[in-house]
Image 1 (cartoon, rainbow, N blue to C red):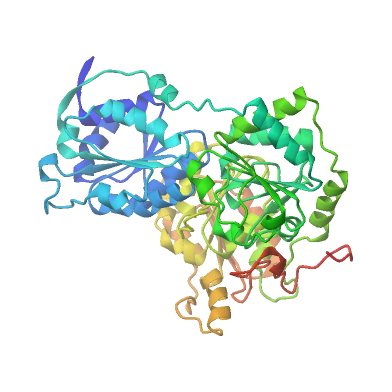
Image 2: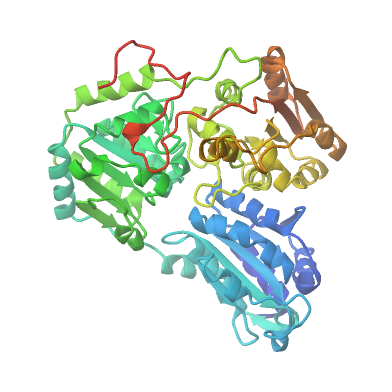
Length: 576
């Protein structure tokens, strides 16, 4: 055993866990930890604010197999991370957030920069730990790391009083494998469960896979790809599952839901067996499901609570609580052992027909650049080494509709919480987790303003992140809703003054910062942006009056999908 202070134990524990980067912002109540980090090989990335630090740490988690770590000080610093923690909780992202705290004897008083962290974060995190002077900090940290990634993953917030950081303790050098093994999930499907599943699917003629974020990891992606190479079942996916399967394949019809692709939203109306894997039955998908009355449903998820939260008229006929990748491999092994195959050729052809017959489109006659036009162009440059982050709004949904992601953990976006300001800080974490990847942060002008200071972080650290901003001088998605609900009265969503964001990026020190206003410059401008080195910023001025299509109206079902004036069937055959 070795004697060291609490701050040194915190840092040494992170080293033992293999942590290479932390994201944070310092302050008085966390100074001992930052001083200890100065003696460590762990790299400190200082963001422009604490919310961004936690977003960057979560971006590190979202795009890798590691757990991102954020370290901030007390009071307003830790409350600044609340949005990021809630965002990670909603999307089931493992995350560790450490906060400095006033000395233990001052907790519960009106001490400077004191806040009841457990009270504030109780419903926004997977777990909140208030460390006391009697606690074993090493075991708390090592356990929290694996707890955050176990079961339904999520953020853990650890509040460490200043005197705990300063006090001397014995470091026991506990083996991290002890903690990892304690969360090992060994649940498997038994032979009887596999038999029950295949009796259901063999009775169907039009099975459909619904792929969720629970598969968005290397193991999950590999398992479902192998499963479907064998069975060839058409699939649709959630926003959080982009890249789980190669979206260029003709049997993947893309994103389902309120702003899903035309073919995905059409095919779901025709299936007779709905196999949902690792999804949370988000209201933007589940509330549109009019098919459920006559369709058998099978559901696999690691979160037992979801089995009781499915908001559709008819619950799953088959369900399994456990790791999705493990269950998929069990089913495939059973099928191969018993020589089970599917004869669904006509259904496969129907899926292919819908995908090629109902492509996305936009107003090609407008004098103004369309955001959909930019996404369609950029999509042609996306490859397996591309990592995308988005803000929240129309640009987010357009990117999800258009980009054919090819690998898991390649499309990072705020799904459950819908947090504007997400893209920029998240892209920083994605870069550090994937230093050889092409990282493109896509934002609207409304979302970018939320964390504009991260332009300074990117430029000052000379990070090769490419920031693409679509500037329509409005909050487009909300404005579209206003136009429908309030007869075009746009309160608070339009910005009358045209701000040149490229000039702001240039002033921060971006090596490439350009602005495009004319369609004739679009293709060459995007190529120059993608080929430039170092921090790159491209501002494209787009049509404020553009409306996002397709969309399923609030309260409507998939049969009520509105394609808009530009999405047309290209084959000339009508959909029944």
